[in-house]
Image 1 (spheres, each protein chain N blue to C red):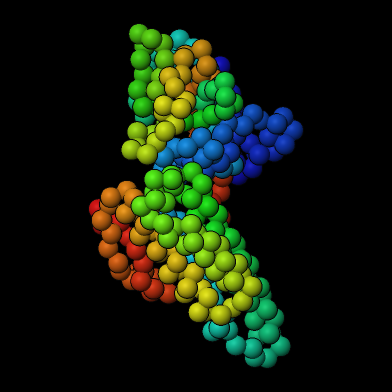
Image 2 (image 1 turned 180 degrees about the vertical axis):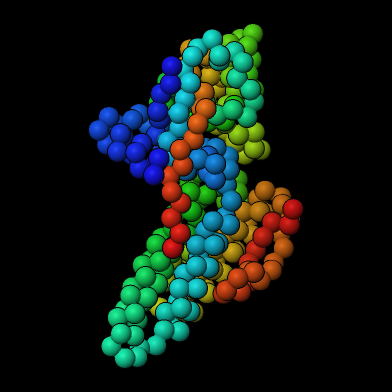
Length: 102
Length: 166
Protein backbone atom coordinates (compact mmCIF):
# COMPACT_ATOMS: atom_id res chain seq x y z
CA UNK A 1 0.00 0.00 0.00
CA UNK A 2 1.35 3.41 -0.97
CA UNK A 3 0.49 6.83 0.31
CA UNK A 4 1.42 10.40 -0.65
CA UNK A 5 2.62 12.80 2.04
CA UNK A 6 3.51 16.48 1.78
CA UNK A 7 6.61 17.74 3.62
CA UNK A 8 6.39 20.96 5.63
CA UNK A 9 9.37 22.69 7.24
CA UNK A 10 13.02 22.60 6.28
CA UNK A 11 14.77 20.71 9.06
CA UNK A 12 15.68 17.89 6.66
CA UNK A 13 17.08 20.28 4.09
CA UNK A 14 18.81 20.11 1.68
CA UNK A 15 17.41 16.62 1.05
CA UNK A 16 13.77 17.42 1.74
CA UNK A 17 12.41 20.93 1.50
CA UNK A 18 9.06 22.33 2.50
CA UNK A 19 6.56 21.67 -0.26
CA UNK A 20 8.17 18.45 -1.46
CA UNK A 21 6.06 15.31 -1.64
CA UNK A 22 7.08 11.80 -0.66
CA UNK A 23 5.59 8.46 -1.52
CA UNK A 24 5.59 6.10 1.43
CA UNK A 25 5.23 2.35 1.63
CA UNK A 26 2.86 1.45 4.45
CA UNK A 27 3.38 -2.32 4.36
CA UNK A 28 3.89 -3.05 8.09
CA UNK A 29 5.86 -6.34 7.86
CA UNK A 30 8.60 -4.32 6.08
CA UNK A 31 9.18 -2.10 9.13
CA UNK A 32 11.42 -4.62 10.87
CA UNK A 33 13.83 -4.37 7.94
CA UNK A 34 14.12 -0.58 7.92
CA UNK A 35 17.74 0.38 7.45
CA UNK A 36 19.63 3.18 9.21
CA UNK A 37 19.60 6.25 7.00
CA UNK A 38 16.11 5.54 5.67
CA UNK A 39 13.51 8.24 5.98
CA UNK A 40 10.23 7.44 7.63
CA UNK A 41 6.95 9.16 8.34
CA UNK A 42 5.51 8.47 11.76
CA UNK A 43 2.93 9.71 14.18
CA UNK A 44 4.29 11.18 17.38
CA UNK A 45 1.85 11.57 20.30
CA UNK A 46 3.16 15.05 21.10
CA UNK A 47 4.24 16.40 17.72
CA UNK A 48 1.86 14.82 15.21
CA UNK A 49 2.90 13.46 11.85
CA UNK A 50 6.66 13.81 11.42
CA UNK A 51 9.23 12.90 8.80
CA UNK A 52 12.69 11.97 10.08
CA UNK A 53 15.74 9.95 9.26
CA UNK A 54 16.33 6.62 10.98
CA UNK A 55 19.42 6.34 13.16
CA UNK A 56 18.91 2.77 14.26
CA UNK A 57 16.37 0.01 14.06
CA UNK A 58 15.81 -2.21 17.10
CA UNK A 59 13.78 -5.14 15.77
CA UNK A 60 13.87 -6.88 19.17
CA UNK A 61 12.01 -4.04 20.82
CA UNK A 62 10.11 -3.24 17.62
CA UNK A 63 11.17 0.40 17.74
CA UNK A 64 13.28 2.91 15.85
CA UNK A 65 15.60 5.67 16.91
CA UNK A 66 15.15 8.70 14.69
CA UNK A 67 16.48 12.24 14.06
CA UNK A 68 20.04 13.50 14.23
CA UNK A 69 23.00 12.18 16.15
CA UNK A 70 24.40 15.67 16.22
CA UNK A 71 25.99 16.65 19.53
CA UNK A 72 23.39 19.34 20.12
CA UNK A 73 20.49 17.21 19.07
CA UNK A 74 17.93 16.79 21.78
CA UNK A 75 15.37 15.49 19.37
CA UNK A 76 16.32 11.83 19.70
CA UNK A 77 15.95 11.96 23.44
CA UNK A 78 12.90 14.15 23.27
CA UNK A 79 11.19 12.06 20.63
CA UNK A 80 12.16 8.81 22.30
CA UNK A 81 12.05 5.46 20.55
CA UNK A 82 9.42 5.23 17.87
CA UNK A 83 7.44 1.99 18.11
CA UNK A 84 6.64 0.26 14.83
CA UNK A 85 2.97 0.84 15.61
CA UNK A 86 3.52 4.60 15.22
CA UNK A 87 5.16 4.34 11.81
CA UNK A 88 3.01 5.45 8.90
CA UNK A 89 5.46 4.35 6.24
CA UNK A 90 8.91 4.28 4.69
CA UNK A 91 9.79 6.91 2.11
CA UNK A 92 10.39 5.18 -1.22
CA UNK A 93 10.07 8.08 -3.65
CA UNK A 94 10.74 11.78 -3.40
CA UNK A 95 8.96 14.35 -5.57
CA UNK A 96 10.90 17.57 -5.29
CA UNK A 97 9.31 20.97 -5.50
CA UNK A 98 11.00 22.91 -8.32
CA UNK A 99 13.86 24.91 -6.78
CA UNK A 100 13.34 28.55 -7.77
CA UNK A 101 16.41 30.55 -8.69
CA UNK A 102 16.33 34.33 -8.68
CA UNK B 1 5.61 18.60 -14.61
CA UNK B 2 5.20 15.55 -12.36
CA UNK B 3 5.30 17.83 -9.35
CA UNK B 4 2.49 19.96 -10.81
CA UNK B 5 0.32 16.86 -11.29
CA UNK B 6 0.85 15.90 -7.65
CA UNK B 7 0.22 19.48 -6.57
CA UNK B 8 -3.08 19.47 -8.46
CA UNK B 9 -4.07 16.20 -6.79
CA UNK B 10 -3.13 17.79 -3.46
CA UNK B 11 -5.49 20.70 -4.09
CA UNK B 12 -8.42 18.34 -4.50
CA UNK B 13 -7.53 15.60 -2.04
CA UNK B 14 -5.54 17.50 0.64
CA UNK B 15 -2.56 15.18 0.97
CA UNK B 16 -1.59 14.76 4.67
CA UNK B 17 1.37 16.83 5.83
CA UNK B 18 4.39 15.47 7.72
CA UNK B 19 6.36 18.06 9.64
CA UNK B 20 10.10 18.40 9.24
CA UNK B 21 10.24 21.71 11.01
CA UNK B 22 12.59 22.84 13.70
CA UNK B 23 10.02 23.16 16.49
CA UNK B 24 11.26 19.65 17.06
CA UNK B 25 14.92 20.57 17.36
CA UNK B 26 16.92 18.61 14.84
CA UNK B 27 20.20 19.89 16.23
CA UNK B 28 21.34 21.14 12.85
CA UNK B 29 22.20 24.76 13.33
CA UNK B 30 24.56 26.80 11.19
CA UNK B 31 24.81 30.58 11.01
CA UNK B 32 26.06 30.41 7.41
CA UNK B 33 22.49 30.72 6.14
CA UNK B 34 22.11 34.03 7.98
CA UNK B 35 25.55 35.15 6.80
CA UNK B 36 24.80 34.45 3.14
CA UNK B 37 21.44 36.17 3.40
CA UNK B 38 23.06 39.25 4.95
CA UNK B 39 25.74 39.21 2.26
CA UNK B 40 23.04 39.10 -0.40
CA UNK B 41 21.59 42.29 1.06
CA UNK B 42 24.88 44.11 0.36
CA UNK B 43 25.05 42.57 -3.10
CA UNK B 44 21.60 43.93 -3.89
CA UNK B 45 22.61 47.36 -2.59
CA UNK B 46 25.62 47.30 -4.91
CA UNK B 47 23.50 46.26 -7.88
CA UNK B 48 20.99 49.01 -7.07
CA UNK B 49 23.77 51.60 -6.92
CA UNK B 50 25.16 50.38 -10.24
CA UNK B 51 21.92 50.82 -12.18
CA UNK B 52 21.69 53.82 -14.49
CA UNK B 53 18.64 55.29 -16.18
CA UNK B 54 18.79 55.87 -19.94
CA UNK B 55 16.29 56.15 -22.78
CA UNK B 56 12.66 55.06 -22.51
CA UNK B 57 13.30 51.36 -22.99
CA UNK B 58 16.21 51.50 -20.57
CA UNK B 59 13.94 53.17 -18.03
CA UNK B 60 11.55 50.24 -18.21
CA UNK B 61 14.46 47.89 -17.72
CA UNK B 62 15.74 50.10 -14.96
CA UNK B 63 12.52 49.90 -13.00
CA UNK B 64 12.20 46.19 -13.63
CA UNK B 65 15.72 45.51 -12.34
CA UNK B 66 15.44 47.94 -9.46
CA UNK B 67 12.16 46.36 -8.32
CA UNK B 68 13.73 42.93 -8.36
CA UNK B 69 16.81 44.05 -6.43
CA UNK B 70 14.69 45.73 -3.79
CA UNK B 71 12.45 42.68 -3.45
CA UNK B 72 15.45 40.40 -3.01
CA UNK B 73 17.05 42.79 -0.52
CA UNK B 74 13.85 42.88 1.53
CA UNK B 75 13.47 39.11 1.46
CA UNK B 76 17.06 38.29 2.37
CA UNK B 77 17.29 40.83 5.18
CA UNK B 78 14.22 39.24 6.72
CA UNK B 79 15.56 35.71 6.13
CA UNK B 80 18.84 36.60 7.85
CA UNK B 81 16.92 37.92 10.85
CA UNK B 82 14.78 34.80 10.92
CA UNK B 83 17.80 32.47 10.84
CA UNK B 84 19.46 34.35 13.71
CA UNK B 85 16.21 34.19 15.70
CA UNK B 86 16.02 30.42 15.21
CA UNK B 87 19.54 29.92 16.59
CA UNK B 88 18.87 32.43 19.35
CA UNK B 89 15.60 30.77 20.34
CA UNK B 90 16.35 27.10 19.80
CA UNK B 91 20.09 26.67 20.28
CA UNK B 92 21.37 29.34 22.67
CA UNK B 93 21.08 28.40 26.33
CA UNK B 94 21.50 30.45 29.53
CA UNK B 95 24.98 29.05 30.02
CA UNK B 96 25.99 30.37 26.58
CA UNK B 97 24.75 33.85 27.50
CA UNK B 98 26.72 33.67 30.76
CA UNK B 99 29.82 32.87 28.75
CA UNK B 100 29.09 35.49 26.07
CA UNK B 101 27.19 38.27 27.87
CA UNK B 102 27.35 40.46 24.75
CA UNK B 103 25.11 38.00 22.91
CA UNK B 104 21.65 39.45 23.73
CA UNK B 105 22.79 42.93 22.72
CA UNK B 106 24.31 41.56 19.53
CA UNK B 107 21.12 39.73 18.54
CA UNK B 108 19.13 42.91 19.14
CA UNK B 109 21.63 44.85 17.06
CA UNK B 110 21.26 42.33 14.20
CA UNK B 111 17.49 42.76 14.28
CA UNK B 112 17.85 46.53 14.08
CA UNK B 113 20.49 46.46 11.35
CA UNK B 114 18.38 44.01 9.35
CA UNK B 115 15.45 46.41 9.50
CA UNK B 116 17.70 49.36 8.68
CA UNK B 117 18.99 47.45 5.65
CA UNK B 118 15.42 47.07 4.45
CA UNK B 119 14.48 50.69 5.09
CA UNK B 120 17.49 52.14 3.29
CA UNK B 121 19.82 51.40 0.41
CA UNK B 122 22.82 52.67 2.34
CA UNK B 123 25.69 50.22 1.91
CA UNK B 124 27.07 51.15 5.33
CA UNK B 125 23.99 49.65 6.96
CA UNK B 126 24.31 46.49 4.88
CA UNK B 127 27.99 46.06 5.69
CA UNK B 128 27.29 46.63 9.40
CA UNK B 129 24.57 43.99 9.14
CA UNK B 130 27.02 41.46 7.65
CA UNK B 131 29.63 42.29 10.30
CA UNK B 132 27.14 41.81 13.12
CA UNK B 133 25.95 38.47 11.72
CA UNK B 134 29.60 37.43 11.39
CA UNK B 135 30.17 38.30 15.06
CA UNK B 136 27.18 36.15 15.87
CA UNK B 137 28.71 33.31 13.81
CA UNK B 138 32.01 33.71 15.65
CA UNK B 139 30.25 33.33 19.02
CA UNK B 140 28.18 30.41 17.72
CA UNK B 141 31.31 28.50 16.66
CA UNK B 142 32.97 29.51 19.94
CA UNK B 143 30.11 27.86 21.83
CA UNK B 144 30.58 24.76 19.68
CA UNK B 145 34.33 24.90 20.33
CA UNK B 146 34.96 24.85 16.61
CA UNK B 147 37.89 26.87 15.36
CA UNK B 148 37.06 29.61 12.89
CA UNK B 149 38.83 31.24 10.01
CA UNK B 150 38.15 34.59 8.42
CA UNK B 151 38.22 34.83 4.66
CA UNK B 152 36.73 36.96 1.95
CA UNK B 153 33.57 35.59 0.39
CA UNK B 154 34.48 33.94 -2.91
CA UNK B 155 31.83 36.00 -4.71
CA UNK B 156 30.71 39.58 -4.84
CA UNK B 157 30.60 41.41 -2.55
CA UNK B 158 33.82 39.88 -1.30
CA UNK B 159 33.36 40.93 2.31
CA UNK B 160 35.26 39.19 5.06
CA UNK B 161 33.28 36.30 6.47
CA UNK B 162 33.60 33.95 9.41
CA UNK B 163 33.76 30.25 8.52
CA UNK B 164 34.28 27.15 10.66
CA UNK B 165 37.82 25.88 10.20
CA UNK B 166 37.06 22.17 9.93
